[in-house]
Image (cartoon, rainbow, N blue to C red; front, side):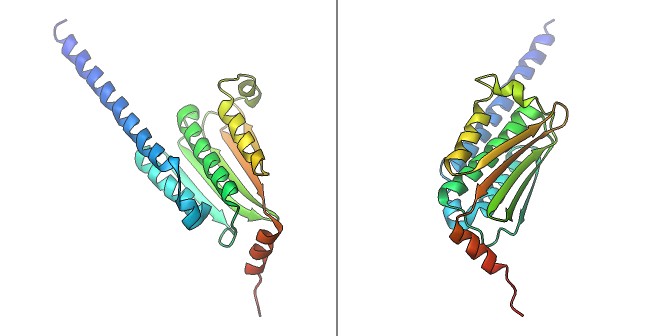
Length: 188
């Protein structure tokens, strides 16, 4: 019995150390989250890649980022911030709730819009059950509201045992679309 007490105490110390380490990691993440000025300087794709690199250094999770035809596309600053915040929320939800080991973030320019898709290989859930629960659905509801405020649309697909996919569609204004299209024209 006397030998069991030191073992229990050491287990408790290790648990406390782990909790403190997680808290420190969260604080570091929040510092970056407060105002991602990179969005203004380098745009959505670079900022998401930087965030993902930082996130992977703190948490043991594989996150792949792809960007297709995004070089010359610039959303409004509000749209970029919304897209970035939704990517953050989706990644954090996948780590905290879904037990995912891999996440993909795909950003692409398609006709008249930018599409951002965050998919995980986690345990999934029943969206209708979560949306009926006021406390657990707040994150998803907040993402939808954030998207709507900048003219976007957020959709979610999830099935228990089959991961989750969050899709954000942000419309481009006419001038942004013209600039994006002109930059892809090749001159012979």
